[in-house]
Image (tube, rainbow, N blue to C red; front, side, top):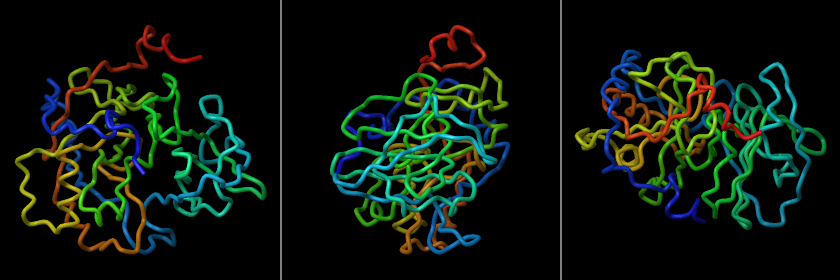
Length: 299
């Protein structure tokens, strides 16, 4: 099953794309953290939960269940920016962190080529509750309405940005990889294909870091000492880049849990630092501090 059309940003080779004029300044700012690239996925359990963001795949006849948007102690209610249910999410679908933290729930409807994602989700006897949710047509390039969130802060789909072990088996990852930064390293802005901003505290015009920003691993980074698994991951970063999708720990890349991951091998990725990246040229940046930009948001 293909994920989005061939001309979608999630499938675009950016290995030869021009650099952003502010690339050196942005990387200098990010490199202040000295944060290693950190695989936020693996095998086994961490604090009792599978390591990574799980997903499940259903058939075209999966029963629909109601979705209720609500606030709770974890976060608010973003139902006004969410897609209404019902969604074909099984009541036994895995919840990220077993319901602790972001609690994403992701379901791929392989029969109908649709993607359904929830944030801060919990299951009920008949359906699901969540802070936000979105559905995506995997045969379409349509984006979320301007300034609408999704199950991810950037208003992006999560599933297309996950590192999945089946891709390692296939020999290639053909999409950018989702990553996070701390709030102090994120601007209150976004750039396409992202559609939503967070109240990040980086307000510099010299080194903006909007959600949706894409970094590319430098072509000069030597991959010869890495395992085949890690070469596949790092090659994807050279070809498709990594895309800023949410607030979180600095330079954490997202993937799906799988018993086949070798956690010790993945640790080798931590030799990569922010200085090993460059910033791909960004388009028009939406600035939440600009009234004219805010006026363009969907009602």
